[in-house]
Image 1 (cartoon, rainbow, N blue to C red):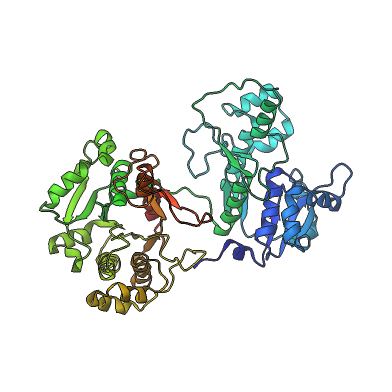
Image 2: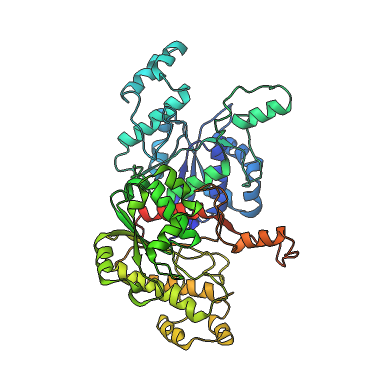
Length: 544
């Protein structure tokens, strides 16, 4: 279990520059409100309009943005320590005494999403400086006029984005031993909810546009209708800054997701299920340099696995990959097996192939019927997981096992943390319960407060992985209610009547007229393509 964000800051001191700006005010308020156990917040202030820094601090804290922290965190002022200084001065204009006081653990630099406007796709890396950094001091002294500035910044839209690009390049070149995180927000606009819904203190960006339009001053805005007006609420940016600092990440470029899979083989269970189909399609479409995708299939309704594979690939979900990736079928290798069988029912020959070839395992096979008998759910969802894990332990090239669980594996908790909770029963009882085949009444006694045997079995599956994974790197994905795709591979694609789809269908036909429920509860749906993207990206992180 990792620390909460607030715990990461507890007892530590923070130094903030720019706390009188729009973003800085919201950042300061959020830190004081949500990380109230921190030791001190040092803020860089300069005297302005005849006001001392103490007077400026008093004026700052009287703004509406701090009303929440005034109401709920009585002694927050004791945490704030103003430091006389100015980023435009050498040494930040800080006195020797204050300089000694300040201690930084992580430097977080706020840049802009528009620091590299010459690129269509912006990667998570620092791009080369557009000019030698040694020229910066010379240009400050030169004070170039407008025409000279245009020559210097070349294709940059303005001197601001040019300067932010140079700022990033300087950090990349000179950070030395200092851990650096660079945040690149787009157009920062009014808060969505914190500290006040819709709070903003300026007329810049979208606010100025909306104000001018509403007053009839601005009637026409020239633009390209295909361009995105990329706005982000200030509280979103502030939350990102605060969370990012706890990660202590040194900015560096990682491989693209597709590159991580290139030349490697994957083993998927459950690829005939709703989620599994979309996962298989996405891998074949977006990671087309993968070596092989081995999929576990069992004969069903008199069909061989080759016939089942043919039927599977004829579904509309694979239409995109058929159109655009002509030879994708060559990548797929069906393996006869069944997660409910010992050893996954895999032949010795196929087992040797998987052990020698597979780098990534996606275990999405599961019984998802809430009314299924407990012993069947345990055999598939718990023992099936153990069988997959057992195979993974033998794999010579394995990088990670990704296990698809559910957000409802711990319904007894109001707040679900990113950790595996203790098993509700000894794992040694599972074999006994499968043999016992408990009836409905006995099942209720066993699962206790769980809503059904399905969530109980998924909780046990997680606990088993936590206890028995050994040297195998494991990632557990907990989606909520997986529903129709938002955009990939087809907008709105789904192949079942489970969850929200069944409800909507029944309501639209007039079969279902009333749904008892609590209006305060969240109907937590997630598109299947969101889940699949998460699974594929998570596997590349190789997180234990």
